[in-house]
Length: 235
Image 1 (tube, helix red, strand yellow):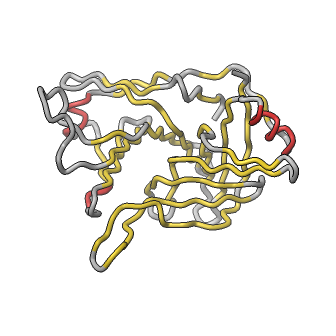
Image 2 (image 1 turned 30 degrees about the horizontal axis):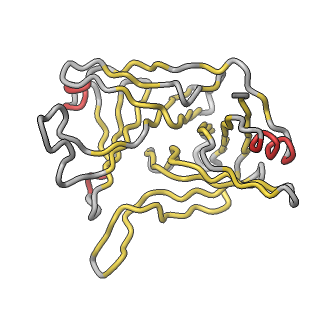
């Protein structure tokens, strides 16, 4: 990633003809192989299932959360979180799918940030937080089994700080999470308070009572070795 995204002003705009949708970008992930070839995914903001352009009853009765992820090579991965859980949670649509017929080709309207400051220590992180600066995180993971490098970038929406202890803790999401051995993706929240490790909690089928299974962020992945970097943008 050779530039940072302005997450408040970056969108994916589809062209229609049936529905030209604009989605706000909420995280991006780059996966690089050993030859430095990369593929980039853009996670859009969550929405709800709709009867689009109807005269009334705009939300579907059998409603679900809806998060689309766009790949630069014109592939769309859609996460549909029904209650109760259903096996069609993830769908992968290419340019010949019904999704592309309805939405049309996506255009990436990405605003690049010009001035970004690396926060080199806890004091700088806490100061930037309390001054109201916009914070962007980058988490770099090198997977020993596949040899792939993953860079996840996201706006920090929630930041915990303790001035007396000079401590911080990021807790933010949803962000993209790579399932590299499965060659798939998931949606997760990320937490960290140091440079060298982070925890994720991914959305998965979760049993709450007897045979009742719902989608919930319950799949905790602990102590992921990584490099966490935080950056500030002055408002």
